Length: 98
Image 1 (spheres, rainbow, N blue to C red):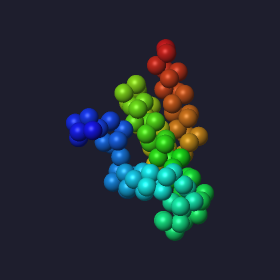
Image 2: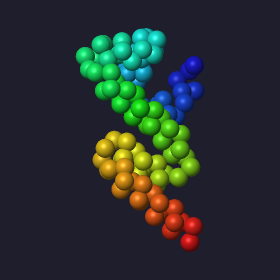
Image 3: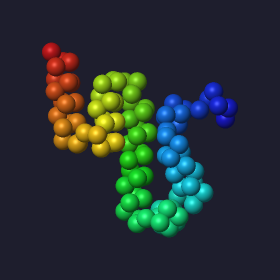
Image 4: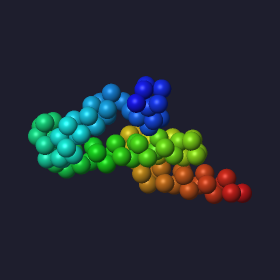
């Protein structure tokens, strides 16, 4: 795949996330092996993978509604708690319908 054909979600990854994905693939998707490699617990790796999955999903949703994507991204990056994010999104969608 040439550089001009890299999916948008991949181009938006931070270098650290891209390295994690590379290591994950090289470990054949074994979270236990990744945990050993990073010197952290399995739950820590699982949490990081879950957050990375959320980032990718958010990147794909960004085209649909930039404001909602921003709120979700802030929540994933722990800049905003999930309950507050949910409340902001609900209110935004309610006002948008009016």
